[in-house]
Image 1 (cartoon, rainbow, N blue to C red):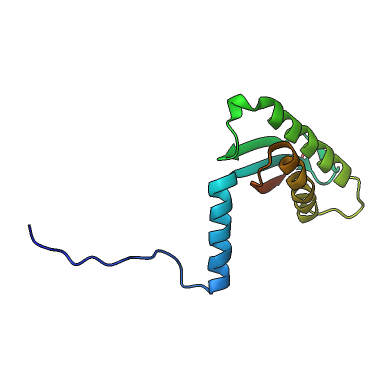
Image 2: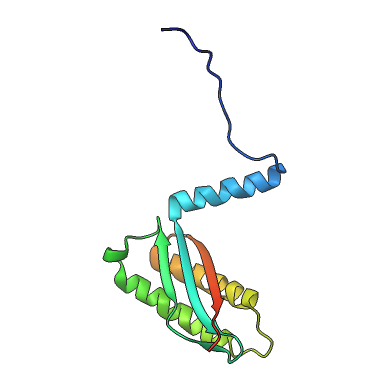
Length: 126
């Protein structure tokens, strides 16, 4: 067949290099340690956690083989949220920051891994 000229193609965006560096760092973390998502349904008006947080992971641990670990993370997340809701002027960002700050060392101590922790807080009106 006919010869085709090939060149390297780099896929990215036209944003500043520091943003690209952050994206690459996050991708490396996700590739090696995965991601952990904490989904919490909260009634912010009454400052109440409505149900246990839902813990979802990708690339972190196998769910079926680590149910006890995920239950510990769920319980710890629930305690963090309930304690944070006692603060007078609380925001979603306060809860998210507290979850990340406390779960990161907790998970590292249990697993030796550092997944990206993504809290998702939903305001549910009763």
